Amino acid sequence: MTGEPTPLQSLLRGRRSIRRYLETPVEPEKLRACLEAARIAPSAHNAQPWRFIVVDDPALKARLTGESFTGIYTGSKFAAKAPVILVLVAKREFVAHHLGARIQRVPYYLVDMGIAGEHIVLQAEELGLATCWMGWFNYRKARKVLGIPRKYKVMARMPVGYAEKRPRREPPRRTLDEIVTYNGIERE
Ligand SMILES: Cc1cc2nc3c(=O)[nH]c(=O)nc-3n(C[C@H](O)[C@H](O)[C@H](O)COP(=O)(O)O)c2cc1C
View 1 (cartoon, helix red, strand yellow):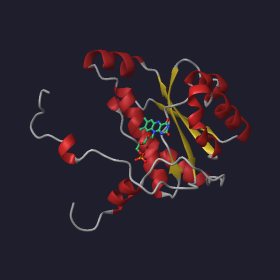
View 2 (cartoon, protein in one colour):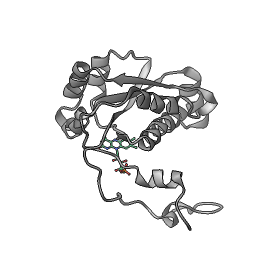
View 3 (cartoon, helix red, strand yellow):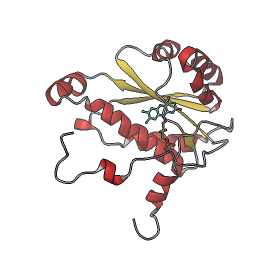
View 4 (cartoon, helix red, strand yellow):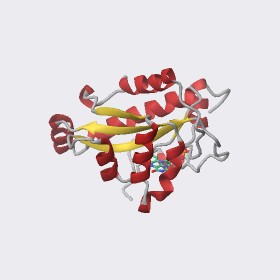
């Protein structure tokens, strides 16, 4: 890359998964902008399988984090301090989940969920908010506490708030040489 980084490049470079949050509330318009960013994300067959459960009620959030961050998930407790927890669920649809996956052998709804979630992350970053993708929590407990019916698959959650501390170091990444090949890829 040569020259000054573009605003998007700076945003992508500067984003970090945040694991220390302030209790400062998130402005509703900022949260809405993040959700709007997810709403307009692309999806296979424009299926838009995503649904977002905003957990901002303090008592419910305490129950959710208290019950789903126990045992082997205790290390995830850092998220409890964030004022908002988003729970990302996918609506199970026959065409997008089963037919597509059977023919193409790729469950595209998972791709869709990832794209929508990352739209949230990047919009949050631009607005000065902090987030962290989280897969390490007790899904069964989360389903129970929030009363999520079986037709929705619980995919991930994401604390949203203001960072108390941002990690200074960028986690290691593979080099482009390690991850990009041109016109094919080696067998081994
Ligand atoms: C699908 C997914 C699930 C993740 N789950 C967790 C998690 O449960 N707990 C956690 O602390 N970080 C989690 N992370 C964050 C990663 O650890 C983090 O993205 C990675 O270490 C790179 O750091 P960075 O996001 O600051 O660049 C998850 C990230 C993704 C994309």
